[in-house]
Amino acid sequence: MRGRMAADIEIVQATTQRERRRFLAFPWQIMRHDPLWVPPLLAELEQRVDPERGAWFRHGSAEFFMAMRAGRLVGTICCAVDEERNAFLGLADCIFGFNHFVPDYKVAAALWDYAAAWARARGLEKLFGPYHLDYEDGYGILIEGYDRPPTLLCGHTPPYYREFIERYGFAPGHEQNVALEVTTAAFRDQAGPMAKLHRVAEAVRRRGKIIVRAARWEDWDAEIDRMLPLLHAALGTLPDAVPWRRESLEQLARGMRHFIDPDFVLFAEMDEQVVGCVVGLPNWNEALIHANGLRYPWDRLRVWPWFRRQPECLCVKSILVLPDRWGLGVDALLFHELGKRAVEKGYHWVDLSVTGLENPMTVRLATRLGARIYKRWQVYSKKV
Image (cartoon, rainbow, N blue to C red):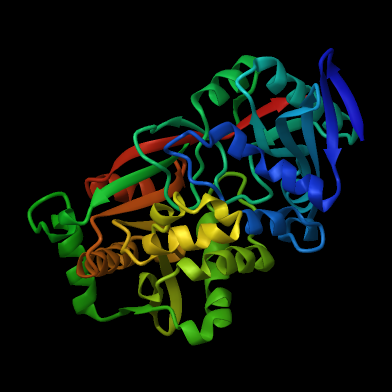
């Protein structure tokens, strides 16, 4: 499929495995000299965009397009439909992602023009993204926080991406998403912002009604089954929340399994029922920033010494509590136990990402504990 959106720009569909690999490798052209960019693992992206293997294709469809100028690749975009999400929320959205472009507004506009035409041809009403066939990994456009690389599952984009997308007429699609940071030294300070956390957690622990345990690695499939109801109930309170699909959680967990330390996947149980969970991951982006996405065999040799080091940062990706157990100190107990373990294992700081500003729990809890926002991302939308 081809389309000409500007006099010197041609839009070409990537359909073969070789073309999709070229499509996925384009960010190396844009950001290879950016010291903050963490190249994604190319093999995992290839699985994600493969209609035979990608979890997205069990509930939606997607097509991939490249902008060409004089035979040179200058931009990419994925246009996708999530049929289940649209049906559940009563929407007609076109999800766009893998949206990269050289610093030339005409190229970016040509890609969005094509995406809008693609959406209209399918009866869709709005472009929404960027999401990269995954609602959890690296979505949105960075609008604040160019002082350090992103942590796991967080994205990075050049500053001109925001300038171009807003110039084109995109508006915020929902509240900003943020990352917060807190030092592990704060967990040792009994008199600072963490003082109340220490008191609440100890009081809850003394009552003995809530038990915190680490994930059972040998029972991983059952642990996923225990986590799903938490995701549905806890995140179901957020605007436009869509029930998690088990295959999506499985794919996310499978991709993260080699990063997971089960000591930091903690479940809270009350009356033999799982009522809360917190997931912490060593920030292996500190090693992956040197891995070149493992594009070539020798990249593994180059990055191996970095994986032998302990990361400085522990990433907290989710803290979930059943809504009917809010106010009982479950979240405080989970976070206190996680911080205690982070201190014991020698982490320097804890990242809480990515969470939306509309989240009723995480941001409030984190800021009360002295955490500060250090990165912001924005998801955009535009009617077509």
